[in-house]
Image 1: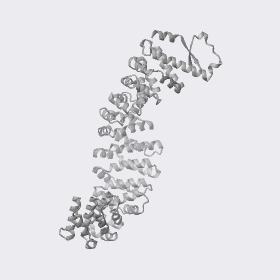
Image 2: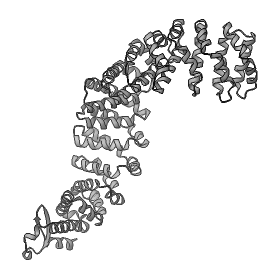
Image 3: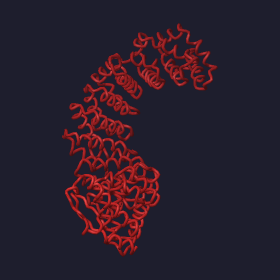
Image 4: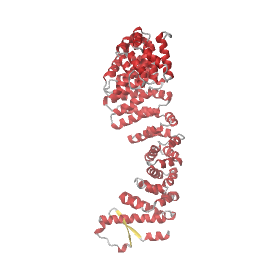
Length: 562
């Protein structure tokens, strides 16, 4: 060590046009205009960096030579700043990385500067490999318990850059306890923008790991994220907090914690604040907030909380604004949130009471097919299982006329399908003759008959069940439409076809039983010789089909009133 120090003492540092050069025996140096040439500058640069690396390799872990160690670490930082490519080339071949690990572990005074060097080195993808091979991550992690903010900043950056996009290393970080350290930084240094940024970036990179979510569920990270969400002033900060929240919301335990910590309230405030903005950055935030609302929905309690905060009407206000401006990303996010809110029974009741259905109907004036598609799906979700909603929608002549137009004339197959499904849902969940009459008057019945022959079994079943319920409510009103659309013949074809699913066959027979209550339709059924097909189905391999065939034959013969 003393020999190395003596050797280095014979070198003096001279500035050479923004770089430095180490030369021996200054009295004999001949300084000339050639010193400013690119070749000389490059040579000087490399010699100086080599001397710093040579010193660190020999004496870097000598705690009695800290001043020189700090000077060499500063020299490396300066070299990286001036010429990254040459610096990284020399660093890779220098074997300096184990020495840096020793400094991190055993020299507190120099550890901050060493962490700074590593944070700069790790910006380069190729330089991560020697950092990993020297186990520098494990040497850096204990430094996250420091109370020195500069240490936390450089150590956090170095760890984040070395471990970025390396799943095995990230798993190792979680295993050795990095999560509590990151949450502590967020908690203790909530006002420090650089440290908060480092901690949030680290959480963003780790949050997809199940092990990280589990570790985070044992902390108070939700409270700290809400605090950062409230104090965030830049769009960049809001976006990274949203990204972290979105990942954490995939975990049910964390989802509950986020809701309890007040995330819905903050989202409501953000939507309200940015509602009138047309700036692209604000639009991105509004979309992220809407997406997060969907992710936070868990149970009826969460939905009611969002309703009480007025989130549903804020989403509708956003839709009304962005339908006019044509911002598709915000429309889709808000519509997804609306549709998710309409799923729980408690939400359906609340939405009806607050006039949400009427506002959604008004939005159907939009000429955007994706918006129309989502709105129709939301109304269908709202009507599912709710007779009141079905009656409200089923007695709106303007809505029914629009649905019938889409059933036959839409160029968008998705809208055509959703319009048919909404008509079927209204009939299925309705209990009113007025609704049956209104759909018949709007000429919607023939479209539901066509839906029974869809290529998708789910759609066929929806139509068959809806027509069966409507027939039970008011068959007289529907009789003529059934005859004109050849419903009996369509049902017979479904029963004969070996490719028809058992459930469709069963539901077809259920509808036939209803139709047998009409004299004219009974006659059609008899003339079409459906009885023979039913007798064949009595030996079908599916038990439900057999049961349906036996029951329908009994009704056809008059053995069982239906």
